[in-house]
Length: 519
Image (cartoon, rainbow, N blue to C red; front, side):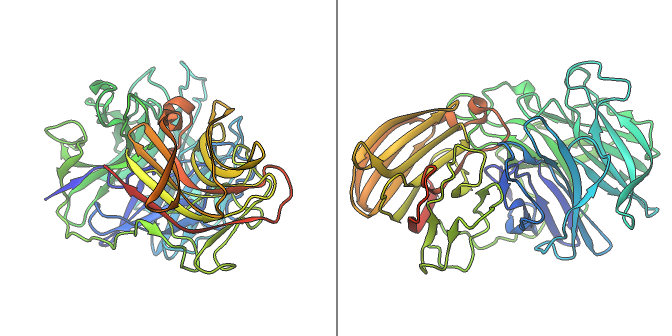
């Protein structure tokens, strides 16, 4: 009768959820990764199965040149009269240039429409609300019209959305600038209606340690909004940085078909000190109502790793195999690329049973689309391994990459180094690249393995799965955390091939890739 948090581990931040009958659907942020916005389904709020991505075509999402931790920010999913809507922000540049758009689909598994761009829609983290009278409202955030009173002071604004004209219409209304003055960064608005009240729930305090959820209500959608006296209704900042779950916030409420209420939110699990390699993950918390205000985690006031489960029939999905043998016609849903492909970087068909990466000249340290596919780190201690068929001729390299961003990652690759074939470990920290270990290794078919025990990493090369040579050990994993590197994403682990700026027709063939927890 219990469940384990997080319900979706790893870098799946800013969860948004809607219910359609007995089915639940959830989306999360993806920033510079492609395809964009994974979509999951569940029957019991605890077990989730990915059914695809919302933005899975280059025509929907062009991430070329987008810096790390820009791109697609928090999305909101809603359902109305047979149609699903996802509205989100596209941050295009380092300077923060942004646009907002929505897409629609009859089937949440896809395909989704081309983006419908909304003119003059400032801010980030938009949401949609379908009122009882048939009107649709768009909410976002912006600097207050009178000017900010303190750093990062913003307000939540609302405007009607005409779905036929596909544009915002009518007067733009200021709704609320938050409950926690001076805390900053009012964002992630969520509107809903209950017992005659319109509720506006938002995130405050930024996405770090001071993150929180606050709420206000009104008897009319335009306000004025009454602030809940026990705000914030959820935060962990008072528990200190040593608490095992931190920076909870960006909440979404959902009512089950049995009348229960639950909140989805993001949170992190720091380890090895206050280092969040896993990024921001999706957590679940119970909610009850008292005097028409929500009480989150009643009797506890905090999210726990083990909590009492929803009163819904358990629906488990088939587990994803730990080892991917690349035998299908397309990549499994957990795989991602960095930015939108502008040319083919891999093939599953040229050599059946293998994933072939092309040694293109793009490097993973550049704001480009490299020949890389990766999956999210989901455990504090893990092991990854792969079998590779690759022979460098000149400047090419291929292997495993542990990626936080272009300036913070580890490359564990085979290449020519100092006149011979070696397996080398490169560390890139704050943009400075260092080769911290190398091992002579000339076999064309070889195995690579990385084991992480907390923040201590070991890198090995092998002739087989039982014949390993340690190349480096006790390597510091903390450079892969957002607390060291900055930004908003969690660590991603994958396979990589590059010719490092030169033209090449070389390829690297990966027979399988395995990821498993060793906790």
